[in-house]
Length: 370
Image (cartoon, rainbow, N blue to C red; front, top):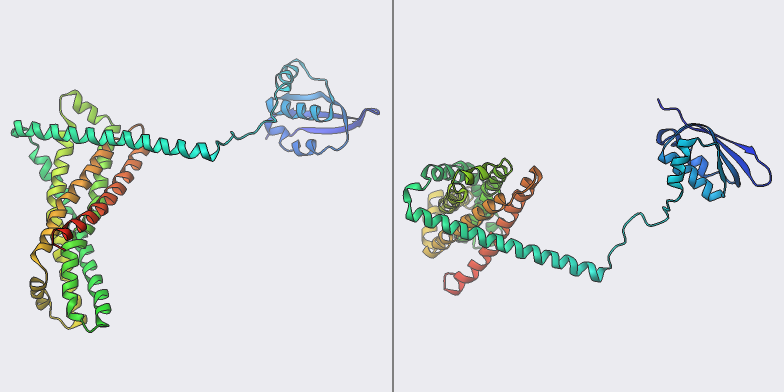
């Protein structure tokens, strides 16, 4: 255990008292008495360091501060202590500890400029990424035998087949919620039979594909970003380029095609399962037989609602895969970047999907498919 510093006050005449310090004036030794030394009220004429065993920068700083405050003379310091006191004595620590903050009229434009510059750099990166994909696609057109069919099938299994249970459960529950809540509201107008119309149109046209895209973004989009980001950190992608293999052709394009194609099947599957969930509510709550509910769907849901969902599905799948692959390839530096880019991939994919869904809604309404 470190010994604590000690002090005592002695009379030194009319000029003030003598402060005698003893023991180690180090960070550990002076910590217990530093407040007491600062609180000494009377004037000090002399600070005696003759009994000090050891002194470091902190101790020298406290002694110089006391000497400056009381205009006292420091005596009894050995050669090493005198050198340290001389080095510390001229330091002025009266300035602000924190840097001066930039005024708001300068800070806001600077932050805005940084965001604009970052957006410009990001736009350049996205355009370059699209260009690499087009070049890779053109290479496969010229040399179709080079296409990685096994990688495509593997990614289709991961994106599509493995996601069937969770997407089926989610869609079934969504169908139940839509039918139950819709029937409660329609019951006020005596129109419970229109629950079939509500469930059929909203699942085939909107929620079936939209919720599937969000689920795929959280499940497969994040996986794409994490996988490619980890490969960047372990320099596997650099090694592929070194031996003449294009990462875009081998890693990115199979993922894009798998997500684009499987979103069509998953979106349709989710819509069908959601309708079945609504039919279950119809069977037990509305008195509509299960198969009658399903037959009624064919009569009340226009065919173009099905096509609206099927047209949106591949676009959503492509957006999700692009966001995941792009952010994965942007990983730099350390493993923390993998998590950050994975989060960015999911957030940007979900945001883009919702924005595109709004545009699709306006577009299909304008062409008469509302």
